[in-house]
Length: 155
Image 1 (cartoon, helix red, strand yellow):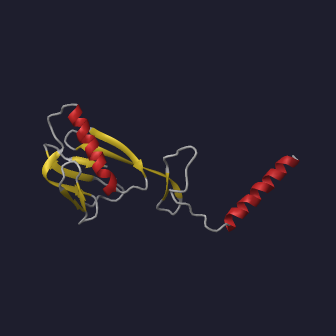
Image 2 (image 1 turned 120 degrees about the horizontal axis):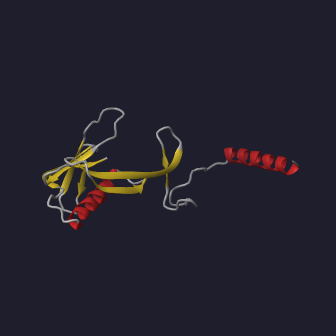
Image 3 (image 1 turned 90 degrees about the vertical axis):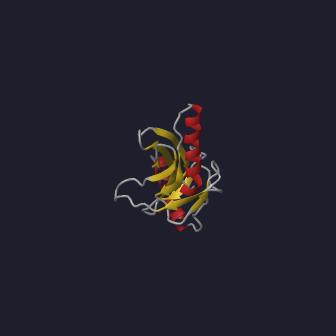
């Protein structure tokens, strides 16, 4: 009983100390999680912080088949990860010797800020990012029109 009371008072004192502590912020470079070493800290829309991961799926819009499912750190933006997802989908299709390619002439992304450009490492050409609004409450879709018979949807 006495030990439990001391433990509770110690925890309460620790909580009070943490509330008064300055410089509570820690960057992803300084912090490492014991349970998930590759996890990154990210701020949520409501202001709280959590471990963040970002899932990207490349989907053939004609057949609705998932071509690639990639998980990235939550602190990486769409412009840094979308090419890797598309390359993973294209590589998988080439390994399976599929006839259809993911690429169509006039490559365009939908779902990211207008005017953004990214250099495609795979085809070595510049690709324009075009804004596309989605209905409220639905997931944002990013489509890449490229040189084949199908569209690519990154959700």
